[in-house]
Amino acid sequence: MKKTIKINISGQVFNIDEDAYDRLSIYLDKLHLRYNGTQGESEILADIESRITEIIHSRIDNDKQVISIDDVDAAIAILGEPEDFAEMEDGEEENSEAKSGERNGRKYYSGGRKRLYRDPDNQVVGGVCGGAGEYFGIDPVIIRVLFVIAVLLWGTGLLIYVLLWIAIPEAKTTAEKLEMKGERINVNNIEKAIRHEYEGVKENIKNIPNSQAYKRTRTGMSSFGRIVAHIFITFFKIIGIIIGASFILAGVALLIGIIGGVLAGQTWLMGDLMDWNEFNLSQVLGLFVDESVAILAIICVLLVIGLPILGLIYGGVKMLFPFRAHDRAIGFSSFGIWVFALILLAIFALTEGVKYNEVERVAENIELETPTNKLYFMVGQSDYQDADFVNLDFGYHRELRIAEDNRDLIILGMPVVDIVKSSNEQPELRIRKESRGVNDVAAERFAKRIQFGYTIRDSFLIIDPYFRLGEEEKWRSQELELVLSLPVGYRIFLDESAREYLSGVDNQDKIWSKRMVGQEWIMEENGLKRFSTNTD
Image (cartoon, rainbow, N blue to C red; front, side):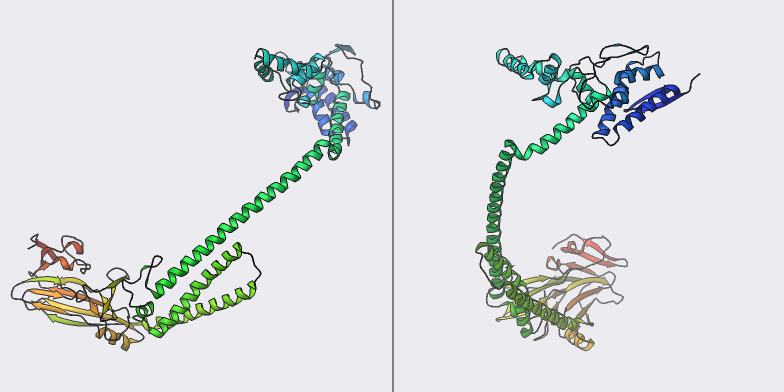
C-alpha cells in the first residue's frame, strides 16, 4: 500500500503516489535552480509544467487514475534532465532520443512529431496559411496564393479558409509552437524558443526608431496632430464667437427689459407691470414705502442686477473682439459698487421691516334690523370698476388691487366674510380691522383708519367690494374681516357676487364656501343648513 498525494500542475489536478511525488519534486527543483534569474524564467517553467501535464495526462485512463514513478520517469525522459543541457551554449540541437524508444528500459513518447496548428506569429488573417506552411515545410506565401486563386476562380477558397480557421487550433504555448514546427518538446528547446522570442522582441523594439515605418508613422502622426490641433482651435474659436454673441444678446435683452419695466412699466420681459403708462415704478413702490426710499431702492436694484448684466455684455464683446483693457481695475471697481448697492438694499429692507413689528386689531358690532327673518347678502359695484388696476396676490384671501384714482394710485384691499351662529335674537355684523405698525399705537391707528362701507336696506345687506387705507397712509398689511352672526331659525340668501369673499364658512352640508352662493341657507343649532336651491 502506497500513500497518494493530490497535486496541481499547470492548472490540472492529479493523484500521485509518494515515490512519484518525490521524483517530480526533485526534478522541478532542479529546473528552478537551472533557470533561476534567467530571462523568461517564469515562461520557461510554465511551459515545461504544461508539457509535463500533457505527457502525464496521456498515460492516465479510467483504469489508472494515480500517477506512478514510471509516468514521471517517462515525462522526464522526453523532456530531459536539466544537467543534460547545462553546457549547450553553442546552440546545437540535441538529436538523441528524437524518436519513440526506450530509455533505462522505460517507454516514452517522442516530441518530434508535427501537429497542424494556426501560427499566430506568422498570420495575415487567422494564421491558417502560416501553420500549414510549417506543417508541410513550404513557404506560407504559396499557400496564401493558392487560397486567393481558389477564391477568384471557384469562390470556395474563402469558405475553406473559414472552416480551417474554426477547426485548426491556435499554437498558443511554446510547446505547441515547437510541436507545430516538428521540434522535440524538451527543456532545451522550450528554453531556446522563449529566449528567441525575447530576443526578437528586444531587437524589434531597438530597431523601431530607425525603421522607415516608424519614421513614416512619426511624420504622419505629427501632421495629423497639427491638423487635429488646428481643427480644435477653429472649433473653440467658433464656440467662443457663439458664446460671446449670446452673452451680448442676452445682456442687451435683459437691460432693455429691466429699463423698460422701470421707466415704461410694460415690457416683454417683466410682463404687464401696469396697464397704464402715466405712473412709474417709484410711484407704485411709494404706496408701500416713502417715495425717496423707493427711488434709492430702485437705483440699488438696478445696480445689483445691471452690473452683472453689463459684465456679461463686456465679456461677450471681449470674446468677439479681443482688446487690451484694465480688466482688474474695472472688475474691482464694479464689484465694490455692487457690494455697496447690496448693503444699501439690506439696510432699506431692515428699515422697512421694523415698520411691521407689531399687530393690532379693532372691532365694531352693528345690529342688523330686518323686517323678516331673512337676509339677502350681496357685494355691491366698485367705484373703480372701470379703472385701470394691477392685482397683487399675497396668499389666500390676501389679494390687493392697485387702482388709479384721479391721477393718483390707491390700494384696495379685499375683505373676507364668515357666517356664524349668534346667541342674540337679532342678526349682527361684526367688522374686524387689523394692521401692523412699528409699535402698538401706530398699528392701532392704521387699523382704525381703514375705510370700508356697507348698506342695509330692508332685508338686503350690501357691502363694498374693497376697503381703502387711510389718507396718505402706506400699506402695513391691513386686513378686514366681516363676521355675520345669525340667530337660530334665521335664513340668508348668498348672492353670486359674494363668491370670492366667503372664507371658511362652516355648514352641515360640508360644501366649500365658494359653492354656497346662489342658494338660501338657514341657521340651525349645528350651523348653517341648505334651505332650498331656489336662486330667485
